[in-house]
Each structure stands twice: as C-alpha cells, then as structure tokens.
Length: 501
Image (tube, rainbow, N blue to C red; front, side):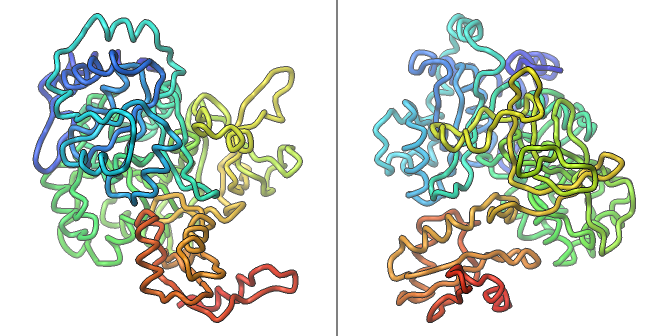
C-alpha cells in the first residue's frame, strides 16, 4: 500500500508532467504545475507555522484549491477547508474551534475572510503561489513528519450546535484511496467527474485519486447538477469515465427524464453514497448504462469517507433494497449490542469500525471523541480502537452487511450528515420560537420544522438561512399553536408525521 502522499505526488508528476491533473470549465493545471504551486505555497508556510498545525483554507471550487491543500501538506501541516458561502456564524464557530495561526484565502474569498473578525494572519493564496520554492525547507519538513500525522479536518454537523471537526491522518487517507481505487478499478486512463464541494469529505476521492493513479479530475460546474441534460452533455464533452456522487444527483436525473436525451457514453465506473439509493432509480441507470460498474458505498466521515462497499452485479427491481456490502481492505467492520458484545449473525447491532482508516477523533473536543472513539471490547490482551457509527446493521450469512437505520436523530440529507437537533437549537435561538421539532421525510428528502411561537414562517426561514448551511435549512416550516405531546411529556413525533405532505 502506498503511504507517502508527497512522494507519490512527485513520482506521478514525474511520469505525467504535462498531463492535466485538475480542470474546471475555465482552467486546467498539469501535474507539473500542481507540484510547482504546492511547493511554492508550502515553502512560504514553513517559516510561518509549525508542523502538525492547523491551517484554515477558504478557497473556491476551482483547480487551484487542491494545489493549496497539497501545499499545506508539503508544509507538514493539516488543512481545514471552509466554504466562504457558509453562514458567518458557522465560519466563526469553525475558526473558534480550530484556532489556526494562518487563514489562507484566494482572491475571490479574501474579503469574506477579513470580515469574520479573525485575529490570526490572513494570506492570499494567489500571492503565495508566486513565491520561490525552498527545497531545503521542504526537505527538512519531510524529515520531521510521520505517516500518521494529521492531514485534514472536515467539519460536519454537531449535535451540540457546534460543528464537529473530524481529523484524519495521512495514513487513513492512503488506506482509503488505495482500497477505493482497487475496488473501482481507477487508473491513469480515467477522467473523474467531481460533484462534491471541496470542503466536503466526498471530495477527497477527486483530489487524491490523481495523486495515486495519474487519473485526471474535472470539477463539474455546480449549475449542471440542477440541469441533468446539461450534466450529461458535460460528461460527454469532457469524456468523464468515473464518478463518485451523492445519491441525490442520480435521483434528480431520473426524475426529470434526463435519459430521454443524451446518454453519458464514456461513463463506466459509478460509485454512489451519502444516503440510500432507491432501486427504482438505479434500475433506470442500469438500463441506460448496461456496461457500467455500479458500487454502493457506506461510511461516515470518521472512517475516512467510507468503510464498506457493495458492487451491484445484479439487475435490480423497484422494490429491492441494496446491501452496504463488505469492508474495504484494511477496515474491520462488525456489530455490537448495547453491552459491547458482538451480535450473532442475522441479528441487528450497532455498526462499529476498526483499523487504520478510523479518524484521529474530533479536533479540540476530547469528551466528544471519548464518546464515539472507544476501546474495542473484542480486543483481548491489547488496546484496540474503534469508532461507533450510531447506525444499526445486520450481517447476512454470506458476510454482506445490511443497513438497518440510524440509532439517534442524525440523518443523511442530500449527501450531507445533519443533526436535526442542531436545526432545533438554531430555531430556538432565533427568537419568537417557544418550542420546535425538526423531522425528516426521507421519501421526498425534505426537512420539516414544526414550531410554536409568535414569529412568522418567512421571518424564521430568513433567520435560519443566516445561521445554517443551505442543505440544513428546512424546506417545510409549519407553525402550530402547540406541539403534540405524549403522556410522558415528550413530543409526539408520530402525530407530527401525519402532517407530512
């Protein structure tokens, strides 16, 4: 297994110096250009920040952002990507938790970065790319870094109302990318189609697969994903061969009848994740792309994007439910009951994950880390560390894992992990809301917020858009005189579900 990210990047660039590594609709960077820019930016950072320190990155969805990430890696640091379009309150919360000495921003985002009241140094990536590389400084950094050093922090929704920063090591990333490329068959002939925002966990595939394989990544324009006919046209124009997308993209394409026109004729390797794939949708994709490989992937950010996979070799029917499959190489996946005992085959238990791909924990959150990253109760005579996913599963006789639901109120919505309680806290903090309950209608992928109070729906929606990412803002706000209650005083969620429409 390849475990040296920088060494592999330089070896791949030496093999394909003039080949496009990252492209978007306006620009393209070759492997040689990416290495050059990353070295220049990394050299500048070596004199400003210690190794194994966090560096916040606020850059757009373009070809230069992966080069910034790799520059941070060259400097021996770990990066925390931030989307400038996120609400101010969320960005400030992330910076407050991270406490980085440096915030990097591109020219399009730097004014937004300066508006946050951040007290550290804000540096423009465009300017750092123009500096001189310091070979000696970079070599010294490499001598003082280790394969299990942190690589990045990805911030997800947190149940306390504060984003959780999942910190992942270089070794974990290497483990996942090597396993994924083996399953999907990714090689130097592939052109990857990026869908995910670059601050989201799914983007690591599109960023790092070129490093390890010599493949190229095209960053698909965001607007294409709301116009599937345009998306299919772009896939053909760019000759995209492989994608790893959220389920919602596939669903939308089928709903609007995109296959009635142009079909993605180069697309042969398809991975989907983030939520449950409706087989009625997958059936349409299989019918139109009969020679493509389809892989269902499951796993949280805490396990370096995903931990299991299921290659769909059979033709599915509308009512089928896909398994989530088998563990990737170097992952250990098993089921525990409430007492920490492994459940018998055929019974439901909590999905737990062990192995080197498990994250280092939550950044600056030791209590939260201790709750989910625990000692393996199945280890005998040594300390084993596992992550408890909070998901339920059941193992078939053939060793294939089935997903059986969420243990708490955390949901997967449009490929993002969302804590419904975080939405409730935001609503209660908005003013004019006395009581509320956030719920999810999975079939229609809609977040509801039922509330009691004197604020009107329009005012509340505006406030929620100010403090929450767009994917967390409820599409349905329902004002009630009071929320229904059970005899024990808890909210009667079954009664609220009857209000879904």
